[in-house]
Length: 237
Image (cartoon, rainbow, N blue to C red):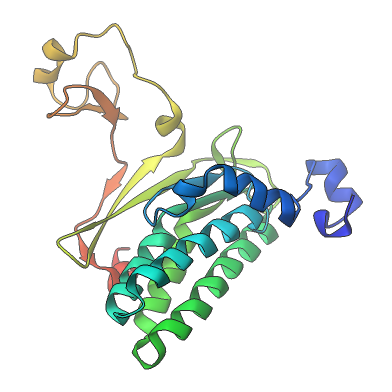
């Protein structure tokens, strides 16, 4: 095993931590090449380590952003932010989470500075740092709970934000519980046509709601924020 694939024998024994080699990362990303080259295509790595997969996906997305929007610094900036919003990760080790966030930011910032030059601004930089702080989470992907500094489960469920651009440069954020996103319909035998009249909280399912358009069960946001310019998204809290 390549030494770059492990941090220590103790971590391998305790957590089974082994990092995927670059060659395998690229080969696996090639299997979903079209999705990796869609700027808004969402990816989640449930054991992201320090970001081998996520970094490669981000590089591919930013290559596409450059090809499409290199003539407009504003369009490049906005679409590079969109690429960042689409990438998510979970890891049980705090040092991995910190390294992954820093690595992703470093990749983005290098390309941002190179492409936007004098138009690059600190507001956007801070917004990207904020998005990464929410998208790359310290948690246990198996229990779907956040963990403490020792990697032990807490009582707090993993929450992920869904980011979507609306009204041009306005970025809208909705927060969802990870465990709810992975569950199927709360009860496939329910008659949604009949139950929709009762509103969102049907039979105590406070995590689910009826889609008024499709009349199907969909996850209900834990929190929902008003749209705000993407450069000021860190003002949400």
